Length: 212
Image (cartoon, rainbow, N blue to C red; front, top):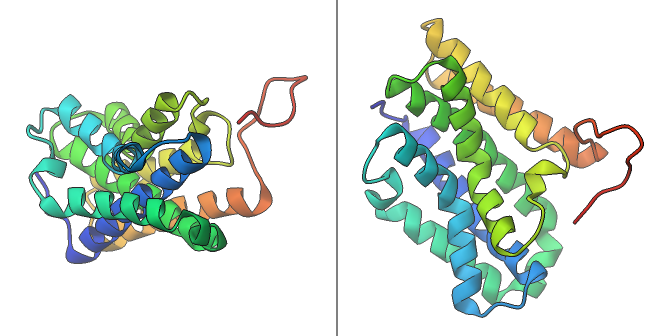
């Protein structure tokens, strides 16, 4: 198992908090839930992808449950979203930015951890994407929505690119903090371009618009 540098760990924890906040806000908007439901969905969003990854690669118990900070930050994000949901609407742009940071770091760390456990190139890239988008997919399913990763502004594609760059640098023997940050930065840039310009992956001919 690889040790993540302090900067990546800090970004990972920041992403966990942002995903908890973002996931809980989505729960507030999509369904009338009590505080338990909102916080639970926030935590699922923040932690779900990493738990799926760790279970699939045999890292038991998952890292989430071996470091209290992840659970604490995910729960804190959910509680803040519940208590300040109306005020947080004004901070949607910063929250989207934090969410993009979380997606980027999770994709990089997920892919590198999968390789460290002996997986091949394809599975490692896939698990990098799962780490980034898995929690949000579970959340959307629980509130009976089409998962946003399947139809919203570029989301899975940036994670795929970030994970693929990570795997490539590991295989080339040049993976380290600069390479990890570079892969995360490219993922972040693609995601934010998608948000800014409303870009989406190609849709079937003859279809238009979005489904929420």
